Image (cartoon, one colour):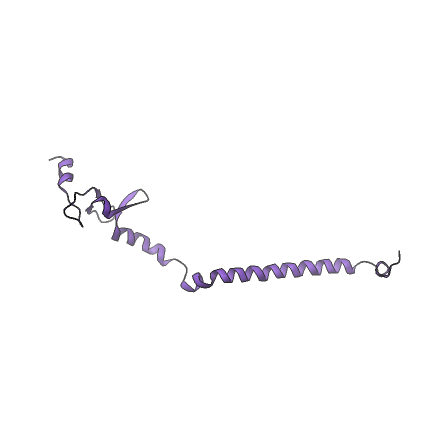
Length: 108
């Protein structure tokens, strides 16, 4: 018996009336094209694909970070911008104040 004839008789694990066209790399079961998804060059069924991506979803940022992260970043940018502006203002002020008093009184 050839591999081709075996594959033609194989049926989808979910849709038993359909011919199987792919084998899940995770569990090894056979599925029709509707029941599998290609990911990183391999074919996976829905449960195996969900299991592969579950660690990625669990390492996502907590809900409070997703909710307030943008506002916190904007506030940090504003505060640091104001601090830089204030530092440059003080630097300019000290440079201007170092001019001799005669300059400010109109004398040369």
